[in-house]
Image (cartoon, rainbow, N blue to C red; front, side, top):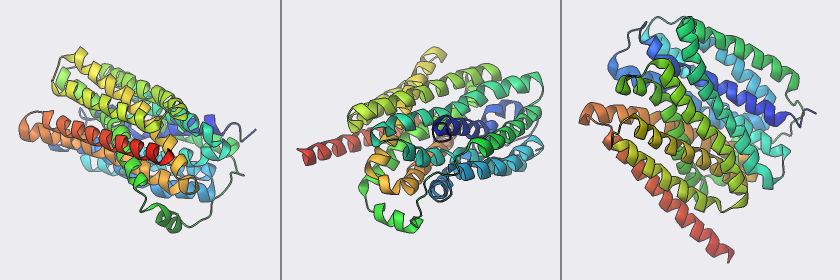
Length: 384
């Protein structure tokens, strides 16, 4: 029974982790009314949770193989209680930054499920299984939609404190339903990394996920405040539009995993990167809100499908070292979400426009398209 419930359980865990991860970016328009944040530091407040959420993915992937998903999820949710409480009581910019850094634990739990769940399924279903688990990205949508509603109804501090209740509930569910008998992999992490360190496919997948998941995270934290300041929307409407972006990406991630189980992943990724470059071009035109949102949702669809495809390839290429490789690839994906908001803010500050930042993103997408096409040709030549 516990084995069969691990996919929905761990998907729910990821939803909880990602809900907590984006508290600051979702509530920033309300926090700014109460706490003075220097204008040049606003982007940093929303970006700092990404740091720890990225770096911790490597050790959490390894620890999942050593200790099991149940233990790692439990420890992560317990550790999140303190930063959530700290943010709910914050009165200074420094306190927000401190709490925000440790909110990153919520984003780091992604590497737990992608390491644990393939143990329960045959290889030909890994793309779909990781796609379903990746649907846990929906947690960011729930927070960007519900947190502003709670803040508007009561207060942003009350809204943050509600996450303490959510975390306690998740701890209780994992205590009861988590699999204590999950298969363990006890090869030392250094030995596992040494076997893959020089494999170019590891760095190619890291680059791909840096762009696809990075764009998803970056726009998740960037959009709520941007839609308020640039288009004059209220916080609730901005949250709903951002939620739609996240829902589309999370839903299509499942489709991306399903497609990757059936078709050439690298050709699929080449199409994804072409779509991302097109989306960046639409945004660079600085259109009115309807066209801007069309560009955003094109990027959302491409990110979702691309994320699903990348995590089909990880266990395909590195089944014996899935823990650290999942951690490394997902770490680069998380870091990909850290830089774009800062780059876009710097581009606006220096050039008076975010077009140079968007052009840099498009260039990354075109480079990834080239790498995916080259890898595909090489693999097909080796197979013939």
